[in-house]
Length: 216
DNA sequence: CTGGAATCTCCGTTACATCA
DNA sequence: CTGATGTAACGGAGATTCCA
Image (tube, rainbow, N blue to C red):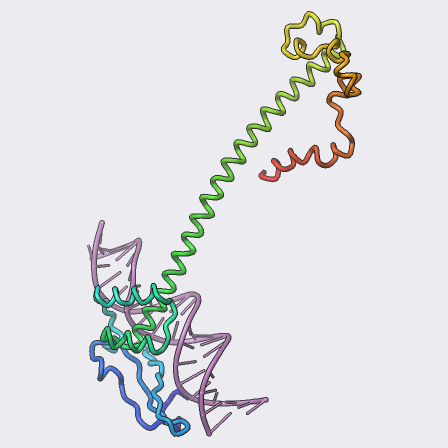
């Protein structure tokens, strides 16, 4: 179907390489549609091609500079701009199109890599925070455990509190618990001091720990 | 409206040049 | 010489546009 012999609209066919001998090029088809003469590109098939047209050549620094400038302005390539660039750089328009295509691919890859680095950095920072918080929770649990043990001890042996040298005993004694200040807040026993309402214990109160456990 | 042809972009791959 | 890397070029597929 791409064969010109099957296309009644095709009148003339010529290789663009005749105009750009150094460039890789496609074949152009000149067709008449609606009385208007149009040039249309047809893709060159080059399977097993030994053709010198497929020889790869490096673009010059000057060509690359202009292409890069153009790419910075706009990553998309309008037909007019492509033609203009091509003639400016003495390249086949298809070469310009391919360069833009490859350049967009490189840009995309670079952006993905940047995003990956950003995510990695963010992840490292979060992990550091997680470790710090886990350590803090560990310390607090240890403190709580020690305090509860001491409370238990004082509950079982209230008389020890007076003579005890423990920091807790020196700050919180049965006398303290019986002080007007504690009674003012409706606190009668040590259990009241550490009382956690059932609804809180089952939800909000534990959320702090659950939050930490989320990172596990 | 529809089908076919042309052309575009994206994607994956290949081929070639260059360098360590 | 060889393997790794960068990139020009290719070909297929899907989407879009144009026209008979």
